[in-house]
Length: 181
Picture 1 (cartoon, rainbow, N blue to C red):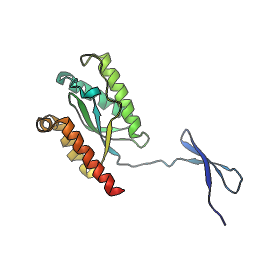
Picture 2: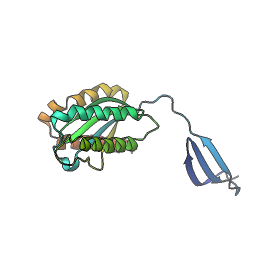
Picture 3: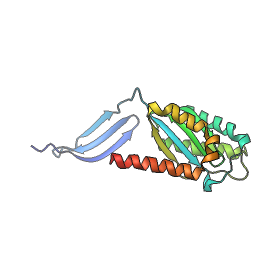
Picture 4: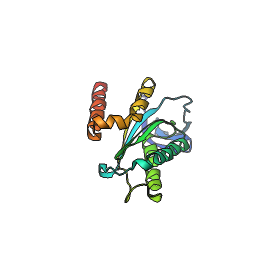
């Protein structure tokens, strides 16, 4: 007996998944509720880079930008643990709601903060983030370590440039990916 199902389409309608599949040629429609995730540990370390890696964020406006981003995170069902806006890049660690993807959260933060920075003239000229960001997963046991790393950015960048820092991140996470594959 052949129990194989040929999936034709899956669509999302509100909080339900509508799956249409063909079983024994009946073309049956099935609607299932999405499982709610009650508890999660979705810690993500984001790194945003200014367009062309320009050192454009002035120290005098750093805290104001960080506070604004904190509000964006909170308003999107997530929690911010640490943030530091360097002149040419920004690090922040969040635990995000399972209802929002890393890409969605990053896009909301990037677009909102760009608008806020420009409308309040917090930098000289027009401010933009690069069109791509980085998002690194963090285990619960490493949250304190990552928070300290983010908050120690001024001291860290006295020894290591952003380019060197970023290359180390990519190298570290690529090695982890290779081990998984």
